[in-house]
Amino acid sequence: MRVRFYGFGCDALDAVQYALCKKKDWQLGYRVLVDIGVIPTQEERQRFSAKPVDPEKDEAERVFEIVLQLNQIARERARIFGMPMPELEVQEGLEEIRRQLNLTNGASEPVH
Figure (tube, one colour):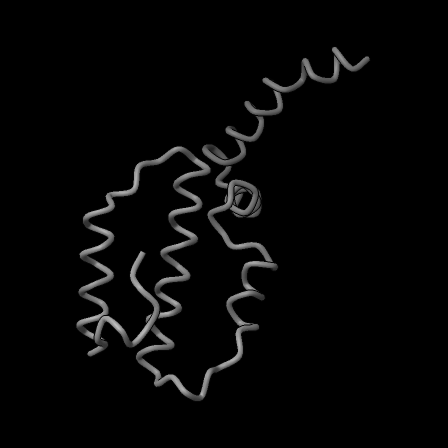
């Protein structure tokens, strides 16, 4: 019975592809995006919102911390899905954000 069950795998994938491509089933599309990690899980969303505000840091420093967290998530997802990360461009982008926020190199955690 298990062999028969697993034999439905290709048919199931065809059905998902048909529902997404032909019927434009947004609910199925959303579920696929959640399952492959494009949309943050409830746990990931809570981690973003549960971090207490540090009164010692100004708004620019807190914004940059969030940028660093998003960068870390992007790096992890790239690693999981075997996608390259353009390190030089990422580093330059983070430095540009730091400049735009008028942060010195020591104002927040190091860029990584």
